[in-house]
Image 1 (cartoon, rainbow, N blue to C red):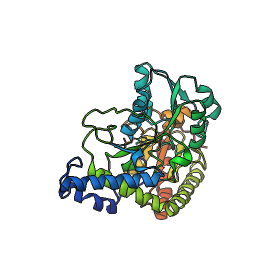
Image 2 (cartoon, protein in one colour):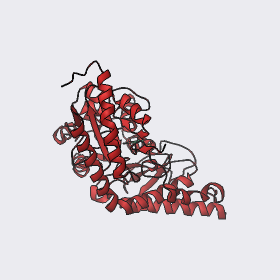
Image 3 (cartoon, rainbow, N blue to C red):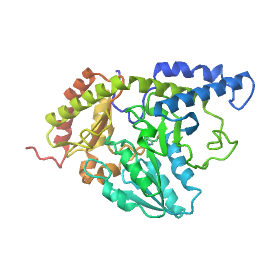
Image 4 (cartoon, rainbow, N blue to C red):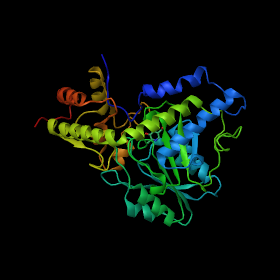
Length: 385
Ligand code: PLP
């Protein structure tokens, strides 16, 4: 049975065109880019090309891109790497960050930093007044994710960066879910630091990058041979870098057609779900959201049971709580938006991607309502209307 895959926010398959570009760098062109012989030079050229592709996709300069092992490391480098030259002071992160930022902020708090967690409204948008009020004279950095991985809400990044700068702080955004899914120009946004990850955009796992605006002083969090202009030691993941560059080039080229196609599919699915199943609410901002993110809360039943039932039908989706591996905790994102724990527990997330079709969306709308009806019949909480 072919899986209908609606979990692109968790990860994506490597695009065959991307894989074809990566393949030679495993077996034939395996040189270490630090070596000056032919194989080494080939590796260096591949790294340089990948960096140029990533930079071009973001409107950045090549020198502003540092490769990392993924989004998590890019976030850690942004926060810990940027703050390490200061005496412990204050930082701001939003209340709905991915654990890669949230746990780094908590780590920094254990090192003596104070953190404010900027609240969000019911749609998941950062409350600009509360955010601005959180700045202090010793606030060094604000970090707000570009687009949320659970509910898909996209933040007003340009404004958030402007406010941070007005208060003398630098601004980082975790754009892991947004890069490749929507147009991004770092200069136009005015961000100082931006994280991205290969496996969310049809590239390989284990590769990511941090954009560091020229003049922004970041120190390393990994120490060793001084690779990546001393910012990220460790022999470069050449096939990964080749894959990230290729994947991002394809994603950016496809955006003008793929973006609107996914928006139409997303809105059709959301409207279909709300119409077919009573006591169901759409989560996240209705329009300022990722093109492929459908997130709903279905009352009286658990997200995990819906995920498992759909899996039985060959459909891969995620529950709203699936941001941490295997966690059954209600999502801090949905709770942070002011929903009750039951509402958070009943959430399902469909994240659409390149290979998804209208037929798949229609099939989903056909099989899902009877699954909900059956689960509700078994639920002691459900009272039939
Ligand atoms: N940030 C966000 C918003 C994410 O969705 C993810 C992945 O789920 C990450 C960071 C972590 O990225 P990676 O898996 O490349 O470490």
